[in-house]
Amino acid sequence: MKPKKLLIILSLVIVTAASVYGYMLYRKIFAPNTAFDQKEMYVYIPTNADFNQVTTIMAPLVKDMDRFKMVAEKKSYDKNVKSGKFLIKKDMSSNDIINSLRQNVHFDLTFNNQERLEDLAGRVSKQIEADSLSLLNAFRNKKFLADNGFTEDNVLSMFIPNSYEFFWNVNAEKFRDRMAKEYRKFWTPERIALAEKQNLTPLQVSALASIVHKETVKKDERPRVAGVYLNRLKSGMKLEADPTVIYAVKKNANDFSLVIKRVLNKDLQTVSPYNTYMYEGLPPGPIAMPDITALEAVLNPEQHNYIYFCASVTKFGYHEFAVTPAQHEANRQKYVAWINSQGIKR
Image 1 (cartoon, rainbow, N blue to C red):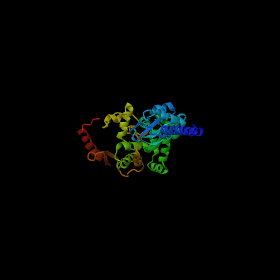
Image 2 (cartoon, one colour):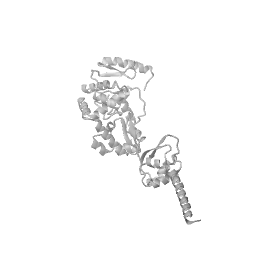
Image 3 (cartoon, rainbow, N blue to C red):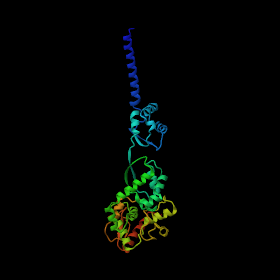
Image 4 (cartoon, one colour):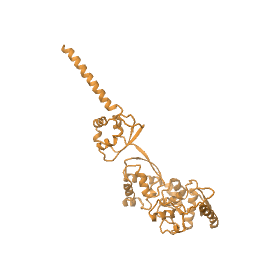
């Protein structure tokens, strides 16, 4: 065979081999390599995870782990693992998967209606990497509390129920500090002025709003309920709020799973700074996390002369309001008769 012809054949073999190799390499890098049927899956990579941990996490989601590892090494991902929450879509290639594992995604963290710091920590820990104990320790850190004007009793006021954008791998301290920033943002000069108009500080607004929040789920009624309690405060009366008694009973028993639908006379004797039948003024902190409508109700209360209110037996969920003790007693007797008829003793 002539040298020239041999060279042409050899060149064709090399080109063919290169094409085959290129095609195989292309398939390894760009062919679909997912092993799940859903449209998309979220992957959570813990802080300080190494590539071995990533392969363990990805194993159920990747069809060909060798292809995944090869691409990860070529793109130097194996030496630069990133922690966080990552979106993996069906039929992604190994190349797409590695690119996605470099793009930490935000999510909307939400919380509301938490009764205690422990409940809040538990709720938040289900949504971010930090566990409930680290969150609780961050919330109760003495230096943080002192620097920001809080106590363990009232720091729950700092958490304004809403939806907040976070990365999954935010740590406890950064989460707490962000909430402190959001608290300061919420208390605008206008809101502070409204609080002062009621002779209250922002922390006192939160404490009273928590009572209003517990008294009624009807948002349209909250400004009227807030007006009743503000009238009592202005007149020097005790607040005598049943929700504070229920909170005091649960706190003294160290059992917030207790279900109390009816406040008994013995409950009114509970010795606790949260018992507003026993002690004048506001409790030392919120008895629950008030939502924004309750906070706004205290800042913008309905103006009226009502001093008393009692659950309505004709308009369930709402209350009957009264100016005089006699009017209130008539409403109370109706409610007592109804609750007795329901067999509710506790």
